[in-house]
Length: 229
Figure 1 (tube, rainbow, N blue to C red):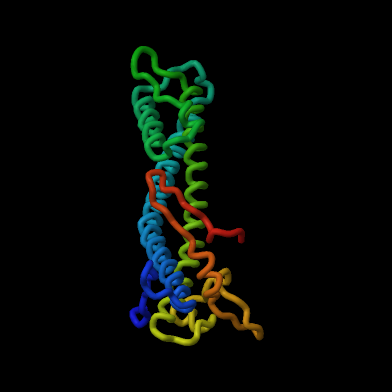
Figure 2 (figure 1 turned 90 degrees about the vertical axis):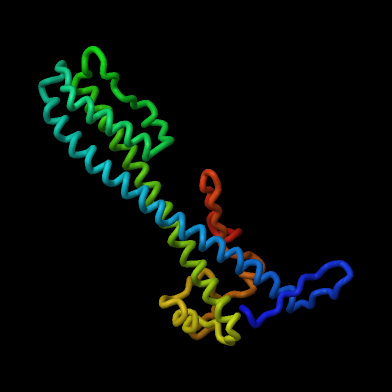
């Protein structure tokens, strides 16, 4: 976009022309898209790592649960061993560290290693609660990953079109964008030209702007593009 000149209208200075105003709007939205892409490049690996940690713990907890469930048969009044108690508490602690705020997991507490050990059914119930919380957490991470991938697709389409414009290209067609992106552009940002052809919708981009991704304390994600799909 180096071949375009930005002009900022201020009091006492020449008023921006319609073309200059349009370019200012496009430039501003392009910067927003680049910022969102940068945030996504950090969020997506984090979400993948969080999901992987939950997956590994879930696999371990499920295997341990199956063994304890077998041992629990006919031993409802027997206390678990110290080794079983230690591992159960470790699994509960790890789940709370990974999952965080799950209202049902909060009710599951580590067993106090003093006095009599808990009986097998109590341990089985706690392990099942942990596994269910990890399943819910992984489902949430799967949804987040899908949202991220969808927004990334939009941003790549937008930035490809702006790159073509900045290079002075005159074609912003589906084929031109596909050559730049290595995949078809996001249909959401294309406008039909008829005869199975389409162009990037600069008017929509100028008026609506790109999807905005924010990385705040709670990693709030503003979904969509400022309008209903």
